[in-house]
Image (tube, rainbow, N blue to C red; front, side):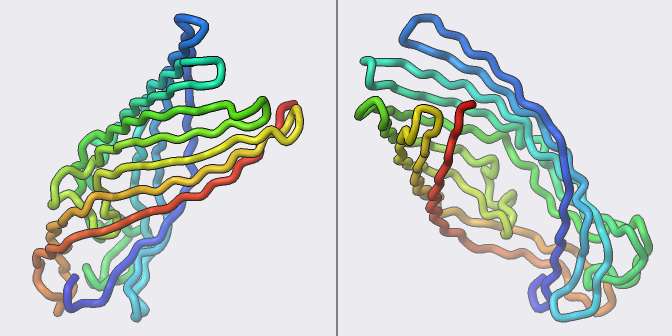
Length: 241
């Protein structure tokens, strides 16, 4: 809330899900894979507090992470060169809002005194489904070394400034990746990869949470823009038993 102390919610939870997939090989040089990862349902339990004050209340928030369907194709142009492609759908349209509920009596900067089970704050989302498209290739330099590269475009589930949460300034993005696999021994492989992500510059329009605590400022609208870039470096070691 502008001109008021900053509030925050910190919580954690465990969730269990499942994955399933099928691999179809229409020819010796082409493979098609279809995979599914189930939704993960969380009840985040933690603390809702206000920076610089003693106002802290235990709370919880329900959050469903989307189920994902992935379709991938690999085609060998030559014995040493393979072309790769992927399309992925994420069910983010299920994420409509994030609501924090108190689990004990106390007070917050938004509500003043409250009892257990009271609604502290709701952040609307109403996201759309997300899509991911990628193309790449890999080349066997030698029997022990494979190099690869690829480019991807991801359509963000946040398609309007009013849906963009300031703490999660998501936007459409372009991925550029390079990597290599080196066979250390017959049973051990080392993977190295680097990815740079360009996120599209976007704007946001958010209405502040209506506070009911005495003396709290009235709701207002915040507008602004977001800029972000990301670098990812990964190292992996695989062992076959």
